[in-house]
Length: 370
Ligand SMILES: [Mg+2]
Image (tube, rainbow, N blue to C red; front, top):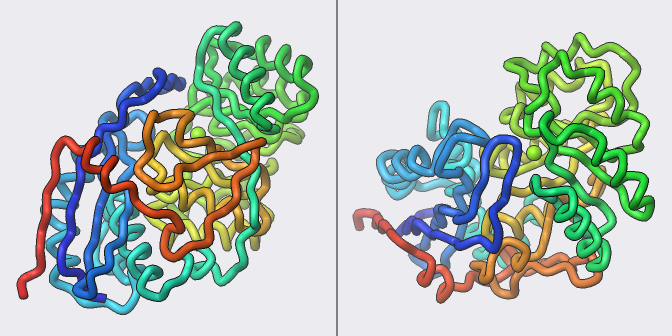
């Protein structure tokens, strides 16, 4: 592969509501879209999903933009390579989200050149025709939460993940599980409980939850080896597993584990593919999360959720859930709670370049020296 031109777009997508978690809130999504262009006239797109503040992982929008501008993009324009995964050998201690966005753009281009679907081609696997929608509800009043759940159930959702924190407590969760036996619940605490709160988490074990994600504020996964009491609900890992080394640690924990797969956090599809293969080999349930992100990144997650062996429905919702307008055509949508999985070349859908330009507040193009 040889890249002739790369453009970075700083996009600001206005959100329909304020999304609140235990660690922060968001009402405008700043994101970086990367477009790579080949001498043959084809282009590929990827998204860098870092947030403007380090509330999720330490990498911020500003960090990603800087390293892309100063290091990754100039280097890529100088190189020739046979597969996008080779870029993971070019950079030492890379910033995961910045490199993932660039890798995703190169993969989109690579598979468009082969006229093959990116995820099906990478995994050499036939994707499921349809996937179910899972929903995430941020923290809000009890009344609003109930309204949201009623609305989601009407739209066909059968699995809802609630964002929780010690301030919210567990009473509401117990009530909701009782009130809605027709769906299943998962919880995500974004590491807001202390290990000393274990009795509170233990109370939730009898509710038959699909999983409890990132309950504890821990520095090292090995701290969880202390939780040797019998606990049936799988504990799911998101922000505390950012590489394959920490994923390997999950096999040493004394309870059932799951991995929430997000391409940006894991540093690209190279690591995500390895992580999924590791989970398959070691009975770690994997399933597909997502961030507040545009369809350019989310559509890849839709296709990962169509791989065999997903442990539960992904956190994947309609483009219209967060944004008035997405950056892909068609937009992501789950009529009756299911989405038909795209199988087109590259990321599977077309980029809405008109929308991309409309929401771009800054851009930077670099070209290779002829
Ligand atoms: Mg999470």
